[in-house]
Image (cartoon, rainbow, N blue to C red):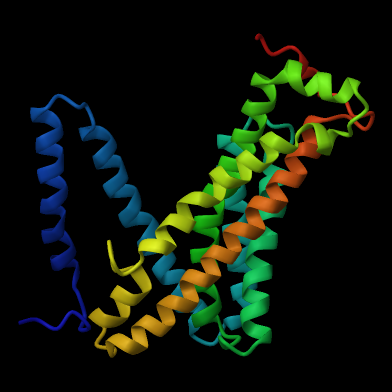
Length: 261
């Protein structure tokens, strides 16, 4: 049996593409019209990961100071993605950027200060990317959910405001619901970790030959880090979204007041 901790060549990668071909064949047979998207996804993933591989090799090879630059680029890309999903929120990209930056710095800062993880590029960059990829989804869910709920319940929100409530008080029920929506997926994943699926970090270590209990300890740290990062991102995104959807005089912004009922 082949040891997966050894080198996997491009020939092996090419052979694995056969699985994509199977998916494309199923799509064509079922008339799902996903063949082109699957082809684009396959080519893009290959090019992007290959490029990132060269960048990481350069950073890890004595250029650790670039890890901060690399994380900053990741935050920008993630913010653009999350902001694009929540484009109806004014300044969505800025909101997402602040939320994701807070999630990354907050989680990695706690782990490094407590001495749980070392301050080196080989550790900080992968962990930061895990936080970002998960927090990005939470931030966009909170932003879009809060905006849509406030728009859909505009009359009730305005009634609350007319009774003297502040924008934060008037939006509180929908603010809470948006936070729950943004955080529930990772909470549910954390509940069933190890029972439904073996997570990525743990699986990678086991395939590399690490002892299962050692891999589990790392995975626990990663899961708790991701859970905390999502909480940071959801709270910051929710707070900033409320501020973007109300004026300084505690009124809904014009775009929400024009939303049809």
